[in-house]
Image (tube, rainbow, N blue to C red):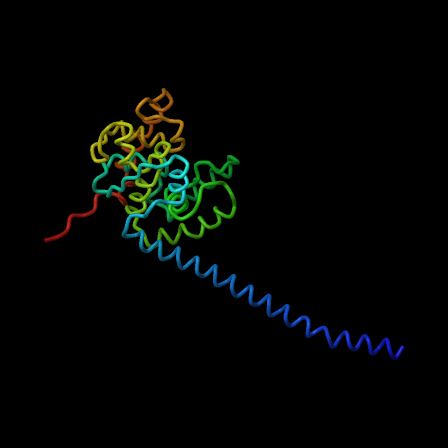
Length: 252
């Protein structure tokens, strides 16, 4: 009995000596994990601040498609050099309440939940975050990051800047990114010279750019473009295009 008690005492005395290194190792791993997470968020914040003023370089999806297709077309164009009707058409097609929300359209989200689908609930800001900072694909990890970064972009970027970036990084055909490249690709023209019908057809192709051809529209695409044109005129008339309209002229 005495020997048994001594053995148990020795085990109890030895336990702390083995537990301490494990706790130290766990704390070390946790500290480095926190540092990595903090570092990633610092980089994202810096990128948000930089891209508020400078054009983003090729996005992760552009790099992926460039490797797959052996090259892409990506021509950055300032908002002032894009036909205003193109901006209104895209907003009418993708996010009619763009000027009214803070990155998330709660009305659209509730409607999508009621219908049992997530389609139609993603705003232009969310799409910009996905295209510029993240990767394509449906998974909860990406959606969680998107949900966190979206308010940050809305905080530091103007609505006009968000839409400008969107118009430049959106995919309009396989390997064709940005409205300038799309205008040349489909209509042999510049983004500034797009007609209302051309702008509406480009906007109508956005949900399925690899399957819809604005230059050779199907009956569905024609009908969809006509509806977008009506929507673009509606948001112009009721003021929902005010947040991304032409920049005010500088004072003398």
